Structure formats: structure tokens, C-alpha cells
Length: 206
Image (tube, rainbow, N blue to C red; front, top):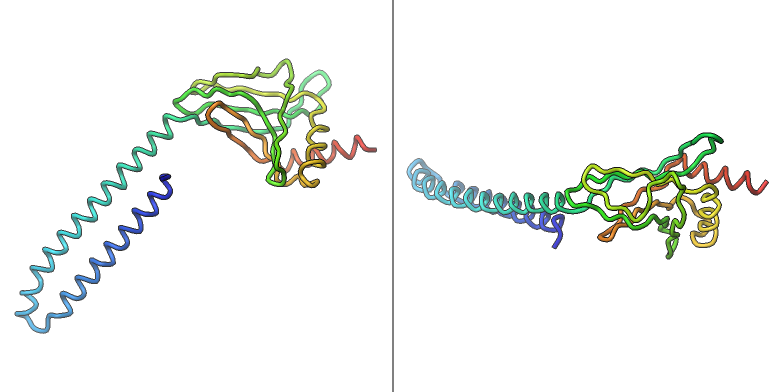
């Protein structure tokens, strides 16, 4: 069961406990009609309140322990921040596509490949070649280690072909994905990159 599901269940239990506690207090004090009966009801009611508070405290303790365990799990897992940008580089200053990554988790990340995929497609496009100036794959990234993966010129034409052949011509769902041995980290294509691809396609077709 995921932490998100556990959190929902615990919150539901806490709400039920609070609701039952409020009902018990209302019933207890609703039966008091005079001063004498009020005193007779008050102390047993306070005892019930103490038991309910203890129960809510126990639920809170379970909630806290699960939260701490989930945080520890996240700290001990891979965590890579990914950016996908347009850059220019001398001498020609032509726009290029570049993926930047930084390892933020305690566990070293073994980066294996880059791929492009879309929610409008059933297949992904593997990024086969990288510029010689780029970081090389595969690459082990300990905590704090960063890398820059520069895609080779004309990669745009392959992306355009992928969109036309496998994504029903739709660019909106495109994502760049960095793949490791244990998982993957993705980022959507920005508005600037989508415009760059469309301009690239228009210039090449003219």
C-alpha cells in the first residue's frame, strides 16, 4: 500500500473518531436536565473524552511513524532533477536540444539512456546519439553530481517523424525521459521547444 493510500485511510479513521467523540459528548450532556444530573454525567463524560483523546493520539503516532518511514524511503531512493532546454554553442550558434540532470537522492543513480515518449503513442523513441561534448552514457550519478546531455544536430527531424508516424501528429503530449536501472524521470516539452520543433519542420519543408 502506498503512502498516499495510507494517509487517506488514517485521515478517514481520525475523522470517524472525532465524529464519534462529538456524538458521545452531545448525547452525554443532552441527558442532563438539572445541576445534579449534570454533575453525575460530567465526570463519566470526561473519562470517555480522555479515552478518545488517547485513541486519537495513538492514531497520530501511527500517522507520524508512517510519514517518517516514507520520508526515509524517499531519501534512500534515486531522485534526479531533469531539465530540457534549448542552447546555442559556438562556432555556428545554432539552436540545440540539451537535457540537464542533477542527482538529489542519497542513492547513486545509474543513468542508462534518454528517450522521448508521448501519451498519444504506444511506443517511445530512443535517443541514440549524443554530441561528443556531452556527458556520456551510461553514467553513475552520486548525490550532487550533474550532467548535460547535448543531442546531435538534426535530432529535431527524427522527433518530427516520430510525432507524425506514432503520435497522430500531436506535439502536446511529448516528454523527455531519463532512464535509470531502477526507474525513470521525465519532463514535458516546453512551449519554446515545441515552437522550435514546428519552426524547424516548416523551414526544412520550404
